[in-house]
Length: 235
Length: 236
Image (cartoon, chains in turn orange, cyan):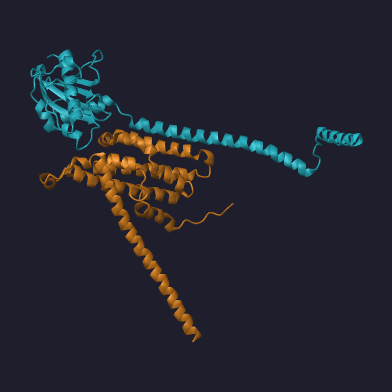
């Protein structure tokens, strides 16, 4: 029997950070595009949907990780879907009872969280292969990243399409005639999504290049220092 | 030549005889082990199937129990929800609930509740279901229509799933203002969910919101449904 490796802090923080930026479900992994475009007509809808998905993802990741050694490989997908569907239904029941306004706005997309590819992808690729702690943090990171993506997209579409910010009308925008209904419709949603994809990936790409160059320069300096030291010793 | 043929035939017969000889039963330990392994593999497949069924059954049972528990604490009484919403929107207290079990609404409309308030106002919760050019999304439009002294006094939105920023333009107080004060006699309650044509000036024709036609139609259908039940069953 293999001895359990001790959990390090990096094992918990790395999935959290990666999920928010590097593996952002909306702008990097491009998963769950269907609810992304459907519910982001308002920023509050995007925020609500994101929080619902985060809850389901964290719970599903935790349970699948706990049961990863017991679930037979042959039936792993039906089991994962069963677990995700259970938590998705719990979210639907709770929002219907305690948040009826949000339930009315999100409508059919709450039960459709079950078939959101973000959940199945993370459960299959991460939770089923890792321990409970990192799996929970991965779910939390991916969920927060998804929520941020939806909320940002919702804010832009709401401002351009309805001239409001989280439901509050912006007088200046309305007076200027800025609200254009197309941005609330699917065509406009695709356009905004596309532009935000490009912008997000460009920014992250530059940051990654900068970090890579920094590390490369650091390594080159180390090698040069070692060479100097060895030359000094030989002399 | 014949001797050669005979020899060949003998060889052939011997080969056939060899093939017909029954296999010798394993006697060595290695052979016995191989046989038992083959038997174990068969058992292994059977055990794996049982494990799959057991795991699926247990997970399904736990899921069902969890959902039943959550349902127990989140189950809503629709009548209570409607009553609470009416009390939020209308100041007068509710006096009695009218029994509408015998009432048959028109096609694609539903009367959820009918109350009479202490000030003799008739409060109807009417829903226009999605149909041809009525309501854009599946859930339809549900309104609280308050009728007093044979006129529409107030209209409030109870629930809808229309597109925010588009359909919702026809689901606010500014849009409902055109109905306020309109006499019930100006509604053609016999026409069902069909909208009046502009030429029928005898009846009230609402102004429709551009880009929210279906939602505007749904509002009109829901208001007509409320008017119909009050005229049919109320004291007007």
